[in-house]
Image (cartoon, rainbow, N blue to C red; front, top):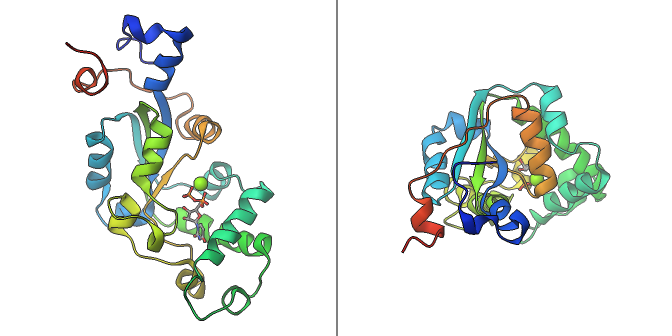
Amino acid sequence: MAKNTTKEYDKGLNGTIFDIKHQRTFCLIKPDGVMRGLIGEIIGRIEKSGLKIVAAKMLVPDEELIKAHYPTSDEKWIARLGTKAKSGLEGLPLTATEVYGTDNDSELGQNVVSALIQYMQSGPVFAMVVEGLQAIEMVRKLAGHTLPFKAEMGTIRGDFSVDNPVVANVEGRSIHNLFHASENQGEAEHEIKLWFGGEVICDYSLASDDIMYCKHY
Ligand code: UDP
Ligand code: MG
């Protein structure tokens, strides 16, 4: 927790307001983002939103780390990947069985997981812990929709990627969507511990904090 930014009124509601203002999330620039030279652009968007980077590092992750990072044994998450992959078919004259060889969400999701594990090891990633007011939701908003062709303009994925799981699958690859961000508190805690456990997470104030979301007058 950031101690030096604590204000009297932050301590209200049993510290809940403080926790909301200093929420931490995990995010990562994927290999395609690093190899396209988009680290600065993506970090710039995080910083300009008023959120604060409190830890960062670059590495090429191994299979073990990627398997631990994603909920690869969660059947619901795997089936959800299958559903998302199928949503790439919208508006196209193709069926799931034609494209993916199956209509079954779990089976299809499992294929997505295999491709995803390869993609995430294909080069360096830039991992970060980001802190700020409702940071988990804010960074998800900055990221945009999982599928690049559905991601809104103004988001990282919408502005800098165009891909569809249908096209990706034909090439036996994951979609290339540049950026990962924790979806909820549970994922954020798990991912911060996995990638930065035992490492220093910095505690400092941003000059903009007082203007952005404190009563400074
Ligand atoms: N993914 C994919 N094809 C799909 C759905 C997902 O390659 O049809 C990959 C993509 O890289 C995505 C990751 O799997 O970011 C994890 O999927 P999730 O549903 O958790 O999306 P996210 O949280 O990244 O938006
Ligand atoms: Mg996810």
